[in-house]
Length: 221
Image (tube, rainbow, N blue to C red; front, side, top):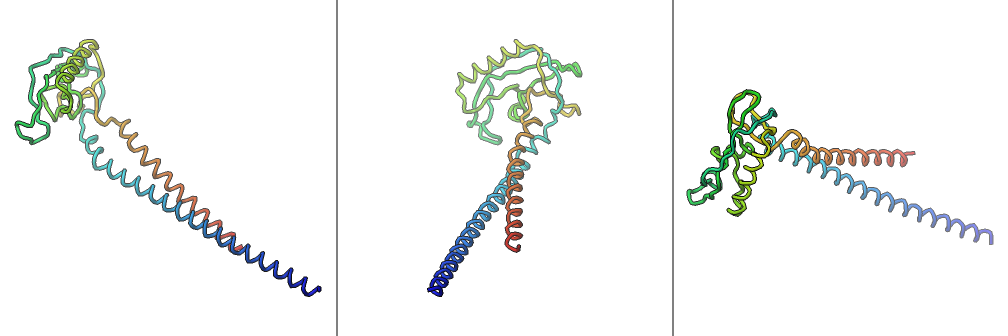
């Protein structure tokens, strides 16, 4: 009887040990799968952030560095006139019939830094698209909406006689612009998201490596 009870206890202990080993193996397998997924997530975040850095670096940063209107000052309005309609090509090098017309707003201001009378443009892109006009509307806008918008802009200029503007301190461009397409704050905001993604990806990778280290250490002990 004792031998039977001992053998049954032994079998029970063996079964419990086997069950524990199976559970431990399943736990280790699940842990490895989770670590692999987390590691892939971290590497994916780092890769995406690097691609975003590259995209911003080749598309937006050149426009920011090319802009010479870097210093802010105060401009005083001299006159804001709406000329007859002008034709503007929809794209550079397009055919003559592929154009759209709009009233030409010309804004002249007094640059307080030098006291010169210069022409004001909306952004850097406005000067490249049409140097004769201070504002170039979007080609997809309706003609009535464009006319109303330009008249409202002219009235706002006449209402606010003094306003901040940007000029070229080097003197390469004698004209001024009202707002920059890519100001320093906007550029920093663009780099914020890939930086957060890169930091999060690196943090995930570090945490996974620390978890693997402690797992290997506990298994060795």
